[in-house]
Structure formats: structure tokens, C-alpha cells
Amino acid sequence: MKRSIAFCGLDCEKCDAYIATKNNDQVLREKTAKLWAELNNAPILPEHINCAGCRMNGAKTVFCSSLCEIRKCAVAKGLETCGECAEKDTCPKVGAIWQNNPQAKKNLEG
Image 1 (tube, rainbow, N blue to C red):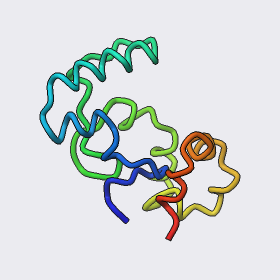
Image 2: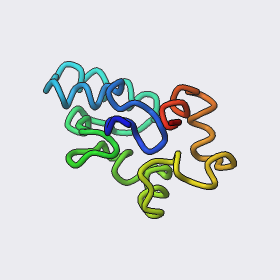
Image 3: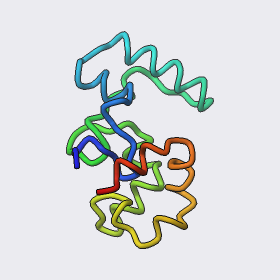
Image 4: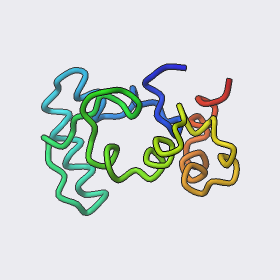
């Protein structure tokens, strides 16, 4: 499995924060910060838009590093991904991701 697949199965390579970090794209950082600030009604600034990927060493957005309940849970359980978790099929946290993005669940299968 690619290391760019997050604990929940989302593909970090498709995330604007990851893309902006990888390409050092300040314009994309600014655009993403503006959008995320509006969507989350939060003070998100371009300098917050840096992420090397959920399961990779390096920079993470504030959400990914300290607010994501899925990431916190998987790390606490010592899991490579949620795909290894015995509770994955009944977990409301990862279930919400998979309901909105079925590909995320497929990314964790086999």
C-alpha cells in the first residue's frame, strides 16, 4: 500500500495541502487556506497549509496532526491503517469518511 494513503484510506496525493507542500506552491497554499477557512469558519492561513502526508514523517496540517480523531485512534492502537482494525465496519468515525468517499475504503482493501 502506498504510504500516501492516510489511516482512513483517503489518498493524500489528492489533497491540496499535500500537493502545495510537495510542489512548494504558494498560490495553492493561499487558495486552499482561504477555502478551508471559509468551510471551517476558522482562521486558517497559508502557512498552515503544509503536509507531507498522514502516515509520513514531516509536516502536517493542524487538523491532521492533532485534531483528526481517526489518526489519533489508529496511532494509539498502533495500526498501519484503519483497514487493520477489528472495529472498522462499525466505527462511526471512519464510516463517515467511507460513506462520503467509498474509494477510501477500497484503498485499504488488499
